[in-house]
Image (cartoon, rainbow, N blue to C red; front, side, top):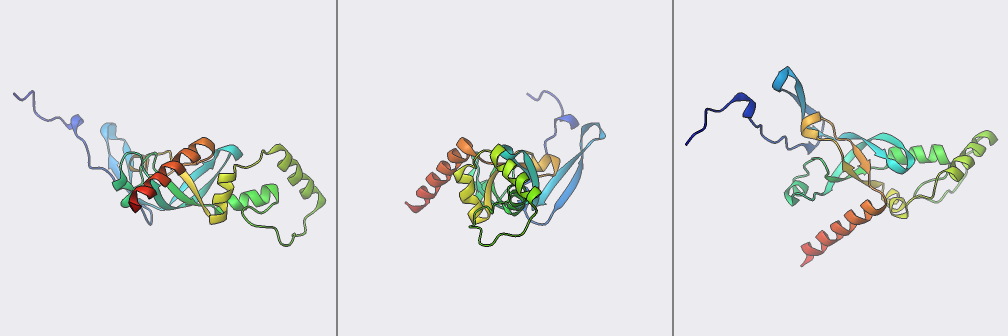
Length: 184
């Protein structure tokens, strides 16, 4: 038996299915007259580098892993907790400016800087711990693994954080396993 007629507050909406591409966001009116930002396509996001305590706007390059559904990887759908690859350039530029040394490359020629700047960079190097070797390897390729922390279909943004340490090792292992399955 039917309990009652359908009510407006019980409705559900179709999934946003946010893809990688030129920014396309639609406003959706929701309960209380509020608005949600439904991202249909996004290509940039704000990503933070936890160990260095900075964040930069980066280009989203690819979706590489999703724990919930492989279909979301194949279709390159951006959802919360998806593992993606982002452009490393903004973080590399910051690292060079802050620490002085080049990331992922050998320093060929030194650019002339004042002694004050050199002292500041040296102090930064001493205070900053050694970088995770796995993250350093990623800088060589120019792509960093990151995790999406926002909900693109709800907030219209694709923000997240760079994977480091145990979390990075965990996801790299998962992706390696997935590659192995494809070959069999």
